[in-house]
Length: 146
Image (cartoon, rainbow, N blue to C red):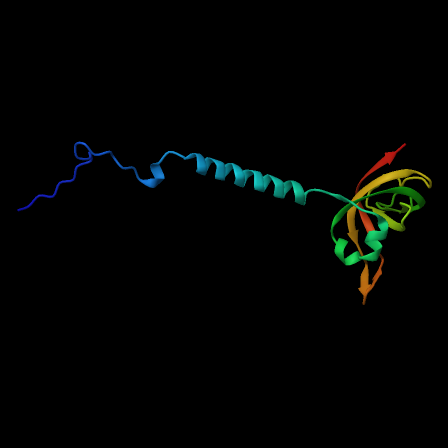
């Protein structure tokens, strides 16, 4: 009867080999991991980035901005709201055009003539051919500029 034995030690004079999963990380694998982490961080930062745009750009190509978050700075040309109603509507003009802003908040709309920076999502009620109906910005945040 033959007995099969296995040795866990390599023969004398030979270096031991490790399984690749047990190998220590090399500089290239560490750099690769750091590059991947940096790429992921940039992707998160870029997708969370709000683009400052002119109202004329939004009105010229509403499809490009549909459901995108933008920042617009301008002067309030009119504001409308009813007390105790949870939304306010005001128009903002940045010198290139005017657009309505819908604020779903009990916070009062800014007064006519106020200078504000609005961050919000561009939306439209309907699109008829190449015409946009009800193009507006739904306010996410607002800062008053003095």
